[in-house]
Length: 393
Image (cartoon, rainbow, N blue to C red; front, side, top):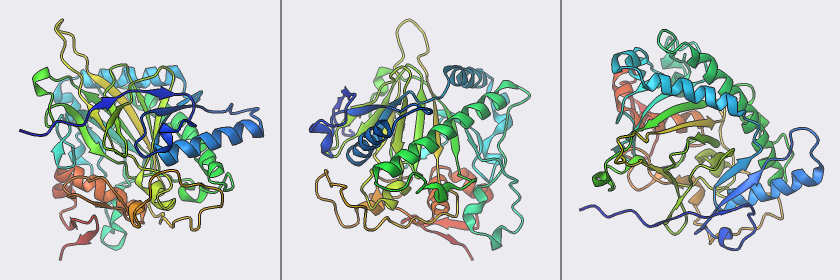
């Protein structure tokens, strides 16, 4: 019999100054209000940057209000997504991700895996539009294979392309603003991270549907839509519906609930941002518990739109060393290599080594999660246990 997960708690605070959130074993997820895009004062910006820095150092997750993503934009993207998932399987497979060397398109229930277990969700994966020509791949870095065209179900849900594109545009504006405040919080120039992304950030968007499960499946195998993991890039920004299920792990191993809060976006940090800050900022493990089938026959499926703000593919993370003065370390003592390891991905075993090149780090995460695409399109490559990728001879 599998061991049940640690207990969960759910607490919230509009301030990041409490003593409990200054420990790795945080008990609450901060809620921050983004300053106005126009007309905010220097004091407002400095105060927000300081609260943001504290949240990212001690928790690695936060809610943000006044984020600027229109409710209509989100509602339209969600409505088009629901229309797609309501299609029959044959229609959904018209954009089957297995046809995409760039890991784009529709994935059936149980296709993706996390930490070696199948995720209990169906989803569509989108990214930066590109040509996707594999010619010359042997002469290019292998991570350039992530560049390619999206697949759109225009024949079945013609509204999806426009609704998703508008949503991604507004999320980009929000992500760039948060990166500026992260720089200010680290006592760096506002534009410090601009070179990380330039005009070609490797953004990704998932549209996810998590079907409910019977209460009898409430265990380590059947009770989770996606298992514990960390994200590979810089920022993850999530808009979720009202069903809930997101959980965040604190430093003591306790899972803290992060349910939907009206008019907020949930933000967490990825592995590359942890690496570049020498572990000062946290890439925090998280997971999604599946909803439960209810007695009235309704279907409380969970829908979410996670947006991943990632560096350009050829970006190489160089730790900020030393960090600017005045950045007090408020977590328990760090291990010497703590910045370079996170929770496991795929079949990585107990450790997940972070690679300094973003494209390499992103490719190994996708490769581990999607073995069918690897077998069909990238059989000339092998992902080693430590995450490095080599060409097969």
